[in-house]
Each structure stands twice: as C-alpha cells, then as structure tokens.
Length: 459
Image (cartoon, rainbow, N blue to C red; front, side):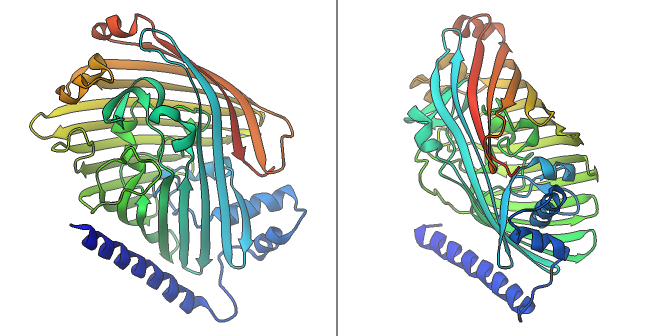
C-alpha cells in the first residue's frame, strides 16, 4: 500500500477507537458511573493521608482493569501472574472517573568488558509509561503510552553487549551491541468487555504496540526487573514488543486466554525518534494459561514479514513458549521465567535458531535484590565478521551456541523519597563459547555492570 492508503488505514483506526469510546461513555453517562470497585477505594484516592491497607486497596483498584481473569497485562496483552500485581510499582491518582497511572524506570550504568571484542561504555537505559484508564460497569477503556530517551542516552546507536546481534547501526549489522529503544515504544488503546465473571473480550492496538507473540518483553518482566541489559535472545524471543500498525483481538475464559494479531513485521529503523509505520503484513497468535494466581504459561506462533532491513527477502517464522512464576514474600517476592524462542528464516537460505533463557529475581527485606539470568543461544556467522561491510554479504548460519551466566545484587537507598526509589547495583556475566569464536573473543570473555537504578514507587 502507498502512503495515501496507510494514512487512510490510520484514520479509519482512529475513528473506530473514538467511536467505541464515545458509544461506551454514552451508555454509562448521566451524572454517575458504575464501578466494580468498592467506594472506599475512590475515597482513598482523594485522601492526603491513607493507611497502608487503603493504599494497597487503592493500588489494586487502579490496576483492576489492567488485566483479565487469567493474569496481569505486562507488555501489550502478554500476561504475568496475577500475584505480581503488587510487585509492579505504579503511581496513580483519579482524574474524575479516570485512573491516571505512571510507571518509570531508569538505569544509569557503566559496563566493562574483557577480551579483544570487549568495550566499555557509560549510558542510560530508561522508559516511562503513562496510562489512562476507566472502568464503566462491564466495559473498560485504557490508553497506553511508553516512551524512552535512549535515542539520546545510548550513544553511538548501540551499547556494548557481547555476542548480541540484531538490527543495524550506520547501515551495518550490529554485532556485540544492543540497539536503543525508540522514543515511542507504545502508543495504543485497549477496550475490554466483561460479559460475565471469568470472561473478558478485548481489542488492543495502535500505531505502536505489541502483537500477540512471545513472553512479556524483558523491560516489563518482574523476573528481569533489576537487570539493565537486554536478553541475549532478544531477537528470537521478544523483539516484536515494538511493532507498528498493531491490531490484536483476544478473549479470556477462566484460566485460558486466546489472541490473534496482525502487524507490520519490519523492525524499527535507525531513526529512533520517529514512528516508522507500515502496512499490516504479519500475523501472530498466542495461547496463555494461568492455572493459579502464581503461574502463567504461554505458547505463540508468528509469521513475520521481512523483519531485518539487511535481509529484505527473508521472512521469519517464530515460535515461543514460556512459564512465569511469582510468589509474594514478607517484604519481598520471588519471580522467575523460563523462556524458549525459535526463529526459522524463510527464504533462499533457510536456517533455524533456538534460544533458552532462565531468569530469577528475589526481593528480600524490601531493600535487597538478588537475581540471575542464564542463557543458551544459537549465534550466527556475523560474529565472525564483526561490524564490517563483510557482514552484509555473509550467509547467516548457526556457528554454535553461546552460554551466558549473570549474577547480580542491588541495595535500595533508605528513605530516598515518597514516590521514587533508588538503588545501587552490580552484576557480572561470564560466557562459555564454541571453539570457533575463541580466537576472536578470547577464552574467557567477561562483562561487569555497575549502576544506579531509579524507579517510581509509592511508599
């Protein structure tokens, strides 16, 4: 489709969303609004001094329309266990009948790497999520945005990340680096209808959003909450968390959620300040199951049209599966994820990449965090060329698997503020690599990050 058609598609989508909002508001207007939350939750929003119990009730009230009977929406419509609700800190207040919610996080860090390919860098990974939602009886409407200043705080169009590949910088494939997020990570709306207890129908979408493929993206996973570095398997598991022209239809029935999406398959380009857009040309579906408040599992499939600009004739067929666990502790919690991602490139040269990730994050005594991430990932032949013009001509093939083992600790500063917390953290990663990579990376490559973490969190 040409530019005029894309503009027409965007206009039609906007009109449909406004029409839904107006129709639902008209059905429930007339001087009062029906709400599923108890009256004391509304009162606590306007109080300047509330008890701890009221704050917890207020938090759950503000978040009640952010999920399904199955679990909590984490990124897009991907689910985390419902028990993780109180582990996802969010500022919130009432604007009339609307809940205004805000979540923000920033890591300011230095990374140091060993070996011939090792690099050092000072940068910041960060994101900001303002959301506006309203519950109207059986209906709810949410407007979601997610922004990042990484186009400015990650210099040189990527930060050092050994053995990481995917997307481009200065026209060449990125090797041993992670690209920054776009300024606009999400601009989307979510309308949901609950016809009966345990059943929810919803439509989600917008110019920038996340289709129904993969686990919750790593910036949103509770099991990865304190790790500032992207997963090594990002482009085989959750890279579609920033996609364009997303339309997702879904339904949940008791512990089961079913979804189907269409979206534009090309990954964001190097201009991280704009919205790339594009016609819907790719498809995804996902099945999620939550047998209890502590567990969620998902299996998803996607046909992604021409995701990489360096291989415009290559499509990708992606399969993912994951299990997520969360359990609250006294003054803390345990969160864990086990993820598998499989990419099969479809074109003249077909190749399959498998990746496996296990994450565990434990919060202890409110101010202490310990985490680990263990990865096993197929890597391609661009690691042999590095970021050189030769990488443009190389036929991607699996050259072996890289294992990455990360361990980290963080300590929150005491009494930092009433709505902002800060912590000082350190993590280290060591790798085991195939023999073919040892002449390039050395026998024992390592990386270490030391960082300050800031996060919105109401005490």
